[in-house]
Length: 210
Ligand SMILES: [Zn+2]
Image (tube, rainbow, N blue to C red):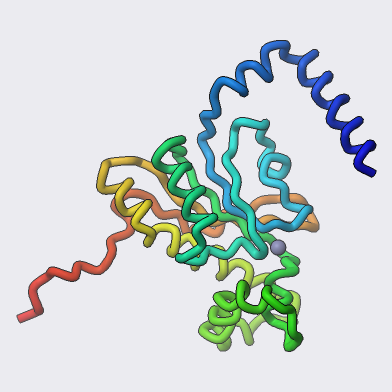
């Protein structure tokens, strides 16, 4: 199995080099991606492939069910590097229909550590129980919950001091929420994009209303 993988790598490297002889030297010298992608670890949703982007065009962080935990040092470190060092213009949080993480969060079964990781999705499911109850079946409810998880994640990214500081410095970075369909290979915009000036944290210092 590993040999197959190494052989495929050699074939890909040779093909890429033949197409563009300075491809690897150019990429090795600099990465300047426009996009930071936060997605699910699911093997069927690789950022570069589904977005049609080449190596070097997207900086990527993936975790189970593309959850934005406000205390996840892994995600926050990648986010800070993407915004402050790479100066990406677009941050994409991408969920997908048929997500196994969302499914696990809605099952009454023990999943070990994943149950801790998936807690924000269960909290969302409780908060939107009435809305989700209107969906026609369990699969549709899970897919709607996957969308809500993305919309909530976009809001959480925008609340981080990383984004707040970037916008105060005048950076134009925007955050978008997309969902990917495993059945048709299409990305859908959830229309929850947030950019500079669209998101204000509560003003703690404002005077009380008269
Ligand atoms: Zn998933």
